[in-house]
Length: 262
Image (cartoon, rainbow, N blue to C red; front, side):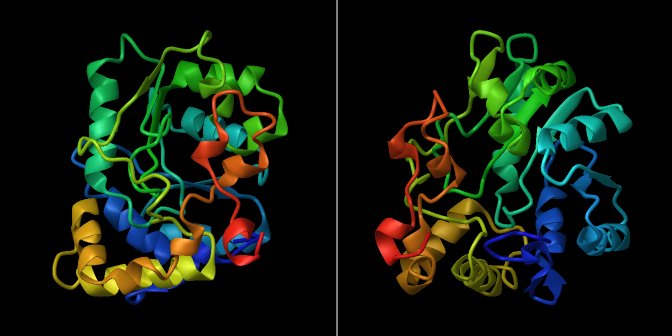
């Protein structure tokens, strides 16, 4: 709830429900069996998230506000998870098929990989972020990571140390790379307006709309794409390029270069 760029974003309304509720609805479309858990912080402001999660009939874990690695690890331990699937709560347009594809790949090759994502390198439109790892992999990161960015973002210690972890990546089957050109995540008011409009256009026709459906909509109505186009390619990497070994400047962009805002 204390998001610095867009406070309270996960509770913003989308077609009469909260953004969090709409995102969980998307997660419940995943074909693989999985326990959905909302992990938030102990900050009193996040009581609203715990209350919303209870209304949705899902478990909620509350832990460190800034050490998300600890929060994810403790939540996984509490629920006796063997495989941990991490989805950011700011991806309400995530395609369930992307989750199934990455999780399916991991499960089919669990003897070969400790960690599999669709992010290194990313090819899907931003906002389809999927990371899957074994509990042993997450535990190793928890006990060994120490840099602030490793604690805040949960998994950098893993993908920054390929000699210590067996890492796999799933690319978008289209062969395209829209990771820097299309933005389906939420950090700014323009992102909210974009997501809201996409739901308004597609949800009444088909609540299970896909990433392909969104892209078709943007082709038909390019004015929707323009709503948050200025933020395409902007992600948290931009603030840590001097610390990240496996991320290049081509994989992020500073919004200030486009519209004068940081």
